Length: 205
Image 1 (cartoon, rainbow, N blue to C red):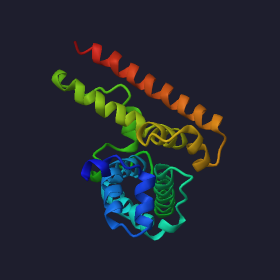
Image 2 (image 1 turned 135 degrees about the vertical axis):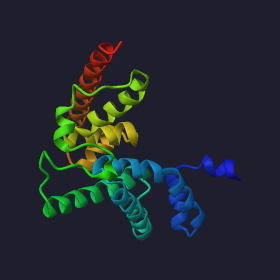
Image 3 (image 1 turned 90 degrees about the horizontal axis):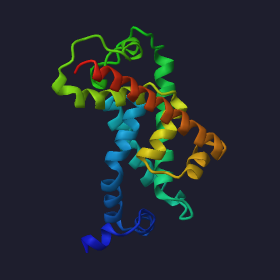
């Protein structure tokens, strides 16, 4: 039975849930909870807030279950919910405070201040050569964080959530070519950041 459930599509599981099968909802949560959390965390950058928003995403799946139309992909629908919650949270944060370049990102984000992150393209501190692999991963995440919001959003929806460009365009309310352009610019920026890190790593040899 477990194998059969694993092979059932998200859309079919959502249909079963709409018909009263609560176990199908539990499977959907298991499939998507971690990915949704990671998507929100990359947008919000504060883990406790991302956890709360992830929980709210699934609350809204429950309360809005009747609104799901099976002509749509479940992943597109749920990431639209997650994206809208991120937008609302970011707006609230901006109303509460205006971040300066000297403001630290806080212990929950596990990162330096915004100013340090922008200026740290060529780090000057000593780096343990044995930790270059870990530094590379961190550098890529930093480069992702520093993408313009519209480019980072498209990159995460396409590469992280595996949502088609056509669906992303519908979610964002922009032409598909605009989405593809944002993706191309994001990839170019990330490639440049990676290239700069490789140049730096070579100087440590």
